[in-house]
Amino acid sequence: MVLDVKQAYFQLLLAQAGIDVAVRTLTSADENLRVARARVAAGASPRFDEVQAEVNQANARQALIRGRNAVALAYRFATQHFIERVEQEIARACGRPQMSAAPR
Image (cartoon, rainbow, N blue to C red; front, side, top):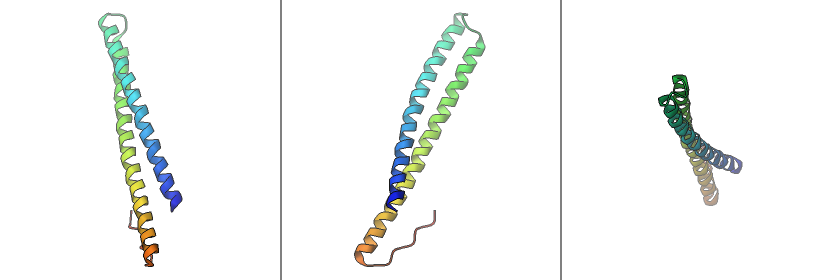
């Protein structure tokens, strides 16, 4: 059970790092779109470049949403494992039989 709690904690850290990457990616996509629009407006690039930058920005937004969802799930999973561990320790300390895990 201790291993499960540790793994859940590290999964949460990994998911949070994923959000940091997704935010940086979105920031970069925003800037690329700004540049692409300026180049198209100046006649230096075809409209396709702007559309491609818009698609990349939309994909970056989706990745950020997926990252936030991953953090929420990892947090719930870590919390659930931590609570189960605490309940087991309390039951052991009080000499009561351990409670069965709640359905997930």
